[in-house]
Image 1 (cartoon, rainbow, N blue to C red):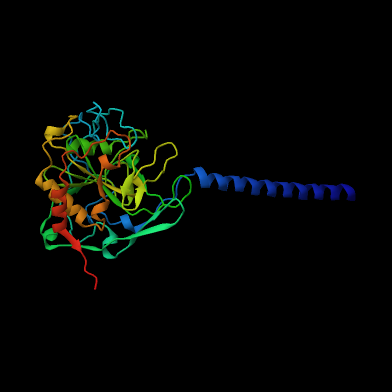
Image 2: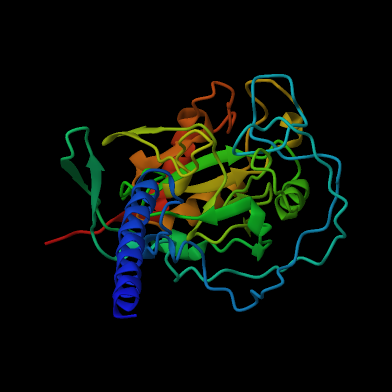
Length: 346
């Protein structure tokens, strides 16, 4: 009886040891997989948290603009003849229609005292890791708004996109490597009426090849439309790279899709004038003075430097995107510089 009892006890100990060893092995394998293929860690960063004015009328059930042309879909302009393609951040190959019931707009006057970015208060260095793992620094000069900025007060309203059309910003890429890119601003155009663009973004799109959004859109009359919260990752560009003073910057956040700038980009779309809607021409009649004014007003609230303001055409690596067409950078920068200036540091 004692021999059987001891044998049973040893068997229990042996099984416990085997189970413990197997558990350690599986944990190690799981850890390795997390470091190579897991979903990136969500970024908790203050640098995007105030990229829009505080709005007391924002609720959990935001309103949408009324549909003026439900069959016309917004797109990120391509040189291929697909005038009704959706503005997807992935492939932009499918056509979609929306029959969403129209609801009243939320219209008000924004608070110009709320900064578009918390970076505006202090000077922060930019970091770019090179292939040898060393960091390069490019100090950002603090900026402040001017009297001209305070005198300009565009209308704005809230039209939140469906949550399927945006995601989280990440602190690591799909390989578990940390990412710390400073923000860039990417300019786009809708190639559709503003109402159609908003209604498209409000559609639920589970297909990753269709999901798309801007953070903000500027209508022809200068109205600012807030679509995606700034701390979230809008799906504004698919296969994309930003080439700036720190070299080439891009982040892969989905193992099945190309790397893009979305993780550190703030996307702004300009409503296309009627002459450019559905057209594959490289140019159109251009944007309104009100659009340039409101765009400069929006960006003046940030500490994003001029050299990190770019276009969809410049970051695109698919060779198809040409938006925003007919954009006058000199005109925009002149207004922007009248709305903000460098803070003098004694």
